Length: 68
Image 1 (cartoon, rainbow, N blue to C red):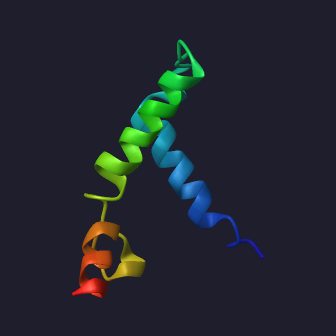
Image 2 (tube, rainbow, N blue to C red):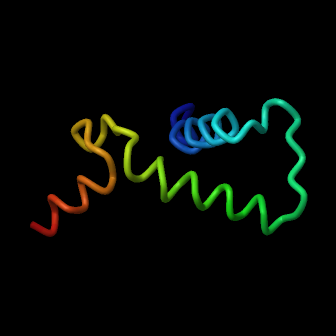
């Protein structure tokens, strides 16, 4: 089925675009790359990005609504 990897591919495309991987960015170490990816996911992706599957709420808003 063609939709199996759509979510993962969308996420990785966003990650590459936001972190500059499309410009042949070379990270000085694996730890620096890990930190940058962690900061992107925890600092922007989970907090600010709206997801249509969550009713156009961020994952943080969605989780807060579930626990309220």
